[in-house]
Image (cartoon, rainbow, N blue to C red; front, side, top):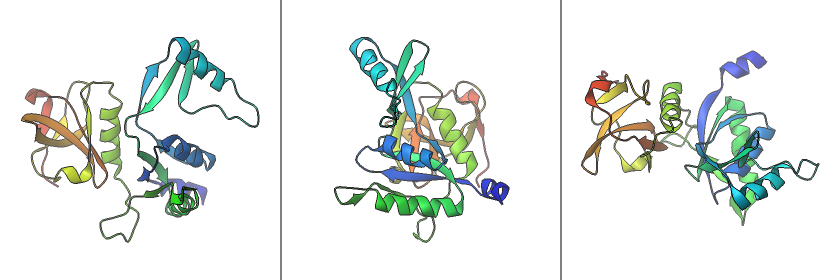
Length: 212
């Protein structure tokens, strides 16, 4: 039964209010649910390093550390969300219903902490195809500068050439070539949720894909 539950797990997106993505990450972690929070790691120095070290040293029953920080030997990094209102989770159909209910219960100033994205007709929770998630993560975690994020309604998807990147830091990613501010960019989308645009990619690194 447990194996079946693992196989049924799909990626979903959660809109989080009040910039409480780390709070949401803690809630899901307590339920042993896999999450993905797009962040950049920034090395801390000086006073910021000392303050983070003190927070990480709090390990008694009243303090659980701080998910914003990562310590690697003497070096401490701060995890800074690239999208302050969005987190992804991998859950079974039963788990996503439970998460949605918990979000309604976890209120701040009378407002739910967030909501799970649903399909266009609002009848079901919108699962994210693995390939979309893989391409999105590949681009976000590439470490490249010049990435820009857009809400899903800022672009009409499935217009323009669909391509796969064959070489370079984004190799393996699939998306659409879009003209953004007069420049041709690769737009990688979580449909209905978010899109990330890369910097310019040479034509020789792109393979045209047939339309779905």
